[in-house]
Length: 193
Image (cartoon, rainbow, N blue to C red; front, side):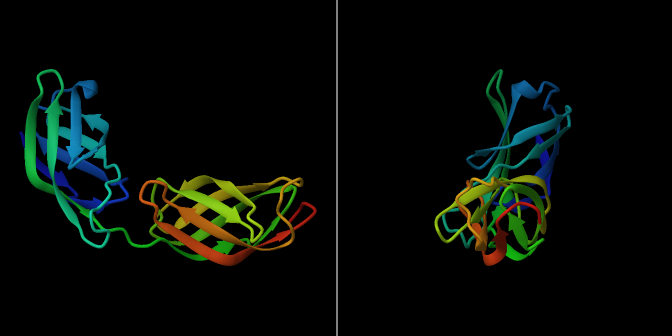
């Protein structure tokens, strides 16, 4: 039996932690499957009366409209199901916005930690530095919140990056949402920033 889910809404990008209450869930995580519409959730914690899970991305039919789905708990041993009809609503994603990058200069032959400020940052995401000549590299994300990303940009001295302005691009590889900050970084050659 499923009684409730909290919160009852989350982004279609996934990554929303939810707490499901009810009874008879069991205590064996491998024996339970949680689905929200067509998307399986990642089970984080399980007791007989409480499940903590993480929502997964769901592609909305219309990216501008919310989609309400059934919450289904399936016991895999006997395929019994507990359903909370229309229990969860996937909300449309706000566009990824980049409002600033610090520092604003990167050097070839060095690794530089950067902080990206903005909004609608959510996992999964990738951060890229892209030059006008087509040269591109992916930064290594070390921390993330909805409005701040910390990443390491490692530009080898033998890279295809030359001196000049470059773009910073953030992409969600599942929903394909993206944000671009054109010319917000500058490359200098010769290591050391």
